[in-house]
Image (cartoon, rainbow, N blue to C red):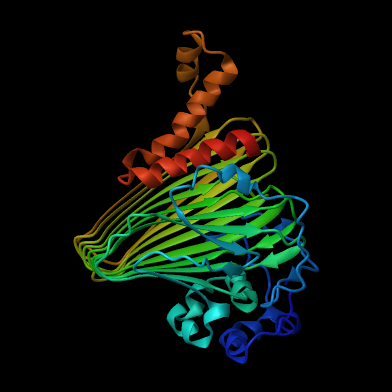
Length: 424
């Protein structure tokens, strides 16, 4: 697949314990094929556009990296936006640990800490849901692990800035976030890049232990020359609370999979997703709300705007497992078409194994409401400006239910800055 063979994975080198950790997936590489877009989880995925015969890979020591330093990232766009955050950087999948650390927060990297940290990362097979997951598990060189102690409230939010600068390369950044019992934290993950070609496969693993709370934002702001297939998963134990914002504004082909596993009793999760596609971009969002704990509750609302020749597909699954009594879940997906050639698909799914539960889902696809446009234009708003105002209101309405103002405001600033200055 893409010329990324088992031999190429072994040539990366690295410590023996890391090679053993990945060996199961490396062995499968020579027979790995692109997923069939006829199966549900890849329906409408346009995978025929993926044609990588020879990608460079970044080795654990950072060598074999074709970095394009001449083209600066959009990092300068973040100036002022993350001033209040404690920031950690990942560059081409390799972590940079800051010298100053936050109280009650431990920040480590797999490369610098060694084999004992691999045990804390856990079973990496949980992220191997498809061929892309197997690729990541075969070629990742490092992992950033952020552990928050028990019974603390981290006042200063944490930002993880992942930068792709290696041209014509495969990059596999990996982040693990662990929030201790009865603790409270705020984390944002931002994906940026130079104007380089290649494929990036980010993975974010989040564990919320009993009684903890996490406010989270993940923003995909890559350049339009890159393809991105990301996978994020959250595990919620008893009486935990997760509130997340997911943004997708960049990348030529962007596939985001976000799984929420409500394993604990009375756990709660809310995900708000905003995606914008233009030109010939393809936006692919797959979400899963997986309920096991009784009395658990989840909500997912997403808004997608596509213009020009852009396409999007949003697939949401609500799964109620046996034993998830008195649980509730809902999902809403809205799609706005700004041109005749833009396309959007919305695919809600329910899989219910328990009787005493409540599930709701709704979806819509359509153009700008002519009555809204007429109302604005009749009050002196120019036609183009009227469409822009309707579009912004459509996107930002997703955030109306957000409870954490700091994360909400940061997401809004990122949306406005990168949409207006970079991607439109």
